[in-house]
Length: 154
Image (cartoon, rainbow, N blue to C red; front, side, top):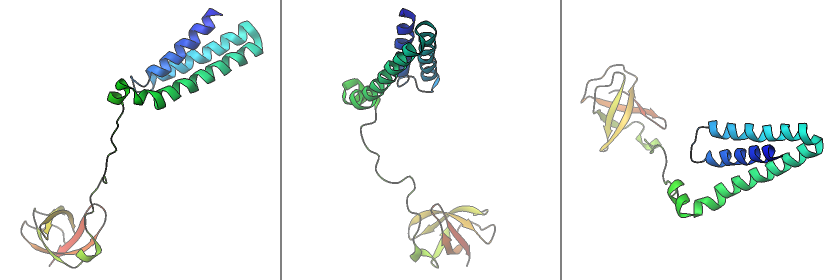
């Protein structure tokens, strides 16, 4: 009986430790320990004992996860462990809009076939439909997507 309790406590402890040592290995060993406790309970105590052990393990697991994600972030240690601020903004700034199509820009770097152009004082990543273009050449904006504009030689 003490082996069953020990394996269950060890398993729950390893699952809780997983938050401090990410990667999944510690959590997997915790799950294996909890399953071993249920198997040993089945061998020693029968089906009823295994079901009770499983139920206790499930309730303990839910309690551990609730503590880790609801209580721990509000503690001083949790505030250092979890990100408290929300990250504002987008992962990619808007490159261009529809009004830029047809405008004239100047290559800021050689486009072979990609590089940078200057349009209205903004440096934009560009792709040349005309092949290689030297730095300082005039180009026309043909199209755009989220990450770059497509240009052709004027």
